[in-house]
Image (cartoon, rainbow, N blue to C red; front, side, top):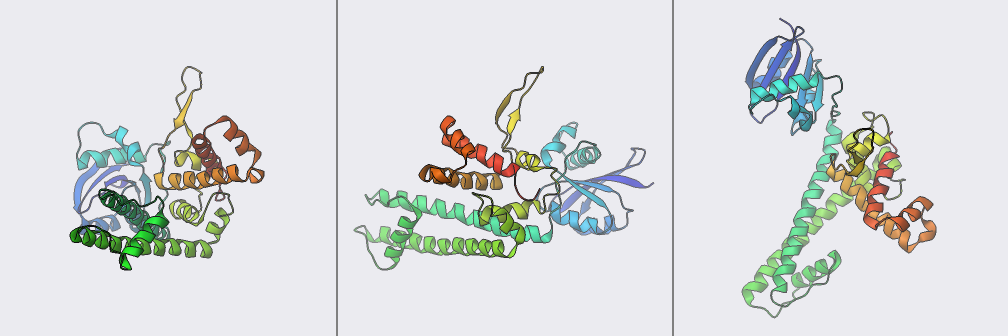
Length: 327
């Protein structure tokens, strides 16, 4: 009995595999320990394997591809409609097996080791940025309780922390000064780590020709360009820039019915990280447009006259994604 299609439900230690034959008969639906997974698939003839695009999916996809299998990653939200009833690993594996055979199913491109390596830099940078913001807000709130005001802006809070570490003592109880000194040490160290990630991303931007090409787009910097390359590679999984913009969740939601077309807000269904980077970059471009209107495009100037700045920013991000270089 030759298995033609397998649904693989990923986990940390116990995986579930659901296999069917060419006649749609169930060949097996069984759990596998982590150490058993690769030996199990190495003994099978090449077949179609579906997996949800979740943590570790790209790693296992690369490993199973080495055995000649056709591995396809499915967004988890597209698998859910095929779950018949209840929730178990066996049911999920069966649903994945059903979903991967659908002719209209959309799949996630398997990332290379190089792409995931670059993404790890972005993940680390994003994590430390959130930690730094949390620490800054906590430090501001703490000193504010004692009547000490720190002006807004990253540079101001960093200057405050450096002055504390240089020996400045606030007119506060000793224990409070000790806590503030400790937090300032942590902030300066965290800020240095963030700068290391930023420098590393700038270095990547100089070395990769694709990143340099994307940086020629107004409003797209080193971080945004390298994040796009790390996430989509050459972009061949998209037929055009419009599909890329839709993948980012920047296109309006279509709620048409009965021949009446109705477009709503952007879907926000795609990669939140890249979408936020693009919107931030376009926000900077809008600010430049207001300060130097002679440099702005007529399209953007006209849009700002009719729409609020944030609406124009998102529209510009959609337009930029739709005309990006990889396509």
